[in-house]
Amino acid sequence: MRFSARRIKRTRTGAFEIRIPPEEREVLRGLPAQMRDALALGKNDPAVARLNPSACLDDEEVDAEFHRLMDDDLNAGRLEALEQFEQTVDAPRLDEEQALAWMRAINDLRLLLGTRLDVTEDLADRRVPPDDPRVGAFALYDYLSLLTQELVEALDT
Image 1 (cartoon, rainbow, N blue to C red):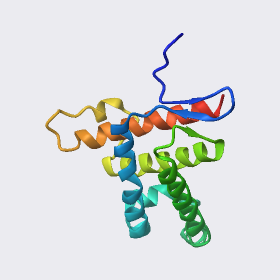
Image 2: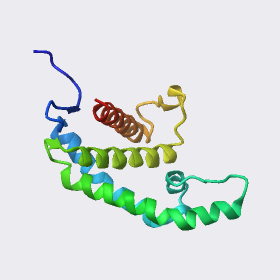
Image 3: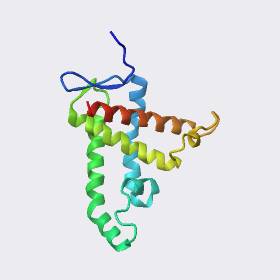
Image 4: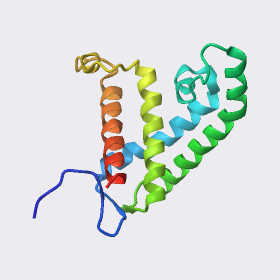
């Protein structure tokens, strides 16, 4: 039998097996509250603004109208995904709807954190010395990126 180090894997039945150790689940349990706090700050927080980017960069009026019409719906979807994520964070298996909610919640958390850390595509920018106060946040960003990738790949199989 071949061992797979993947944390998230689609089974033959179509369910998603979640192999996340308890200490990692503990970290994940604390993240939805942080997202809710950020969303409460609204678009005045640059990290939240990143979640709902501009639709029209060359016309402020059109962009403002887009945000007026869409931001509440987009954030409601985020909150729904967070709620599903919270309800299933300790589950050993997910159905497809729950896996999609996990993907959205985890990716939104990753984007929020990445914006706050000013993450770029350059991996060298994420190499910080062990005594840098951001080292834990960068490790969390990389972990959330890994989970997002595994969810995408599992959903694609």
